[in-house]
Image 1: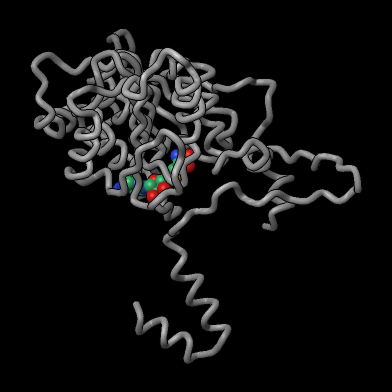
Image 2: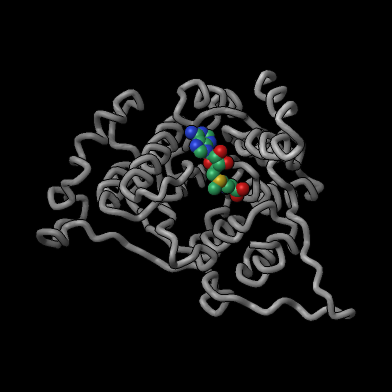
Length: 316
Ligand code: SAM
């Protein structure tokens, strides 16, 4: 799909470029905030799986940049935003970047060190594995990322704090919901308007972090396993107990974002311009080291001749 055609078919893609966001995902976080007020009172945030950085941009614009303009705030009082991804990310004002794997304990240690004994008010996680198209597999890998995020949450989030995580809706959604409910009395699955209806993605909005009494983060996985087996939805009971059988787990699901706003599943005409020729904007910040970079290099080299290709293969 060409840029102009995508501009037409994906209004949030076009708007992201117009407003200077690195990715259309920025609107998802903004629309979650419209509904849940997630940034209220937030001073310290962790952005898990942050590249190319549109959520970090939202955090910077909503929290860091306004605070920086305030004449009363010293540098040490400015909001702290720590962003982590496997991929490197171009810099964003007010955002500390950590390149690492969130499923690795050492990454969690690096994040904790940045907080220097203090706790975060908010942890967000927009992590997604490379989607295979096999829904069960994608959902499983996605849930592993969320659980890695939850591990970090148990180390860095303050009591009362919030955790927002991307989920893939599927047969184990109720299991995940119950696991999150162990730590958060209020869990809502939200679908921002900018997330297409055709996509299985949604976001778990978990409020008021309250780990069980005497909880030790070392016991997290044992505790989560006690919730139920992956396909045992009917055995789960994390509701208030008044629902029966398969309805035992009632998951609050909410659409969010201005309902009269743009519909991500619709095409919109391109804006009229003075000379009549609409010029598509370039992406705000292309990924600086995407995993497909090598494949592109090889493709380019193959069109220049086999010797170049062999040279590249020897270099790698
Ligand atoms: N929120 C980002 C934004 O607004 O620009 C978009 C995130 S993108 C949908 C998903 C990201 O998850 C990718 O950049 C990928 O590198 C990252 N990711 C996937 N698995 C990861 C892992 N185990 N540790 C760290 N990052 C991971």
